[in-house]
Length: 101
Image 1 (cartoon, rainbow, N blue to C red):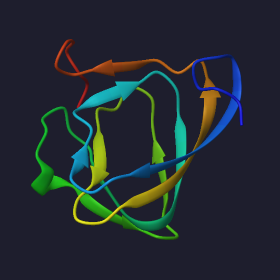
Image 2: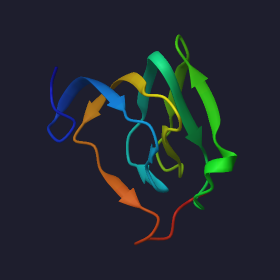
Image 3: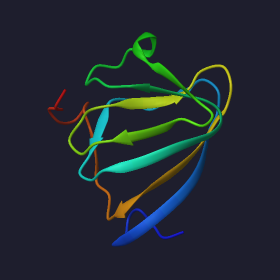
Image 4: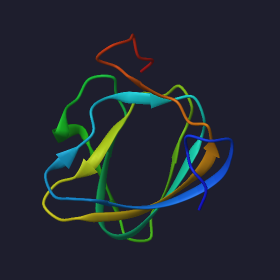
């Protein structure tokens, strides 16, 4: 429903495949997540370290605050999440810009 690249409310259903992780980045708007199935791994840092992620299992609710560096993804099993927020959403890579920690 909606589009995170356009103004207004959006909801997305996403499946993280095993062994896929994002790299440190941050967003300009708050976002909300609900883990539907599997495990979604979340780290809060401007330095990528898969060993410093925490498991969010099915039924977990997660908030990503604006301007806070993070990375996330799936380790050994898929993780299915629902993401909700308001667009337009801007994502900034910590590789290209100084990231808040």
